[in-house]
Image (cartoon, rainbow, N blue to C red):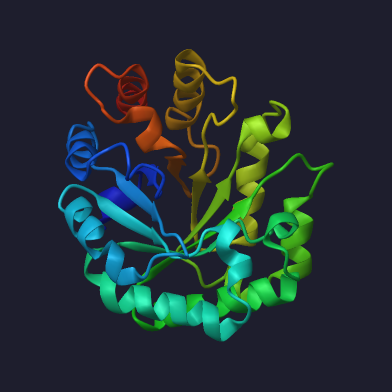
Length: 272
């Protein structure tokens, strides 16, 4: 990724939930039609080896940057120790490195409630992956989950569990946030991100996931929410955007005449 692209990231998320309903050609056409070259976050499922993703990575990389997520937070507990987690990243690197611009070495790692492992084990796995990817001169991303402070204080969790060897050796530190999971609570990002930057010194910051995932979500609510994130003015000096709308494929493909697709694209062009 060149310097211009690093200053602003327009991300979308592609997972494995569309294969039976949408063709790869439709997906590529939708990506090609976006007004900015996006960064596509590809969330890999534990059921599939890296080799099974190579064709998808290769085709998408013709039209977009790629952020690989070899292990989603909901799969983190499947990897019982550092060696198993590291092996997943080694396999992904050996196959997918030619197509990958960023590596998400840990996703929502403070989500211990659904990960089902102790923080020390989770962090040890993430540190091993970070060291491995950085040893190959590649760029790494860590995504933290944000919740209402009364439910979980993200900053306290970071202070209690992350070492300087991790927080000061990342290229990007992102926040995953879902309003629907937090009773519509909207944090004051102008307070959150400056503090986040002080924790992850030297890293660029932004959103690693967002989306309108409630069962009651409508086209209008998705467009409103997407616009609120993709047009957000910089809340801190090192903020680069990100966003990585969850369910982008389900919400936006097929793309022709799709109001949510058009709404996200329009929001990208509104940012100043």
